[in-house]
Image (cartoon, rainbow, N blue to C red; front, side):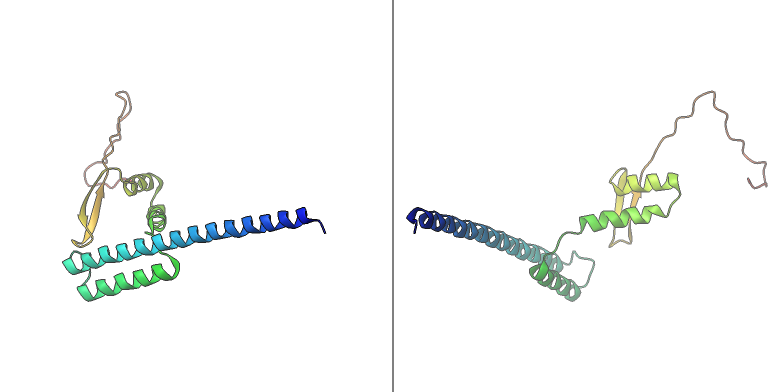
Length: 149
């Protein structure tokens, strides 16, 4: 039996086991950090519920915060930014082309925003100026009482 071959395979095995231990501990640390982040998020959400700043009554708010925390512990939870952006695009898709462009610009944060969900809605406004060349013909308004076709 060749003693060098046995020593090399033992060394390789030790290196493989060490690498596995390092990778395993790294994922455990990442999971621990995620758990701590989830717990901190729950505490923030709970504080909002207790202060009355949510759009829900306290019992519902606390139940939702607890459910989100449990979901995060089971399979992870994200802030839904991608889903929110996708939803905004889908809402704008139903509009005619020119209106759709304005809608998408407002959803991307252009213009001004006022209101809250608690007050009944969020109003987004984007003012655009259209420069007409001085020689361009102006559209004729229909005579009084007649509807434009």
